[in-house]
Length: 299
Figure 1 (cartoon, rainbow, N blue to C red):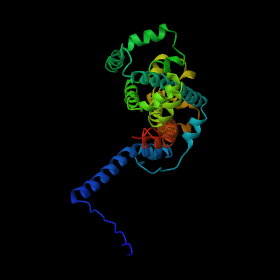
Figure 2 (cartoon, one colour):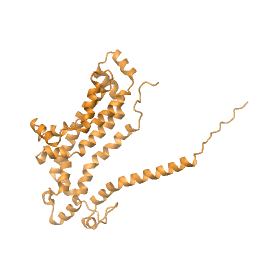
Figure 3 (tube, rainbow, N blue to C red):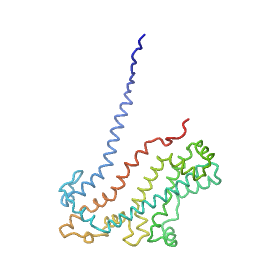
Figure 4 (cartoon, rainbow, N blue to C red):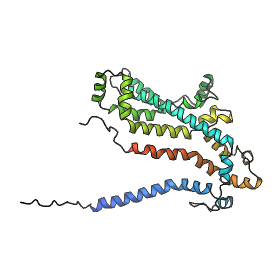
């Protein structure tokens, strides 16, 4: 007897589920539009001429295409000096934060650790209470960190929220893998470096992005502890522009260019400041959707 052709059975969505999908799609589109509009408006203003900007006629499309401010800002040596400072601060601070957070979270994930509850409580306590602005400044100054990179990278080296996220991830890690590695002769640090971290790319990439964005956008620490302009990150450079502390005369340009520069210098500097983080995200986004235990022992 010949085999009968198999028939695919299609399950029709209910009306309520179809309505939910339509509503969900519309809601996502609206949220994306609301989120993208300010950024697209900044891009449009950065390439628009001064007359259209002052008249409030620039929305999503540049009007009176102009790159004068880009030329002036990018020719300012202090802007690039501060930009390089931001890159250095972000890389060093993120590296230190990842080492400290990973080691601390891995230790706290071990339920046999003596004093585990105390250390977890101590970390959570710092989420809600701190020494205050003046004691922190006195401490940083007493340690000789003012006008140094350490005033930027050390005070916020561990985010308790990121620490708790990584701790929860490590608690669900396969114990069989660690026990097998221990039998093979690996030490605790060997297990962490050669077994746990390679299988934790999703959470590691997420934490790197969180820390990098936080340090890249930070400005108050630098504004508080740094007095020399050549040590500022680019966010303080932008802050000074927004506050009017840096005039267009300091940036150069003829009198005719001064009005154009003043009209969209904020948009230009904000665009140049946020662009690297926007370019970084697509390279890390793939780790957000992967299974966090990819490659581990399957049940």
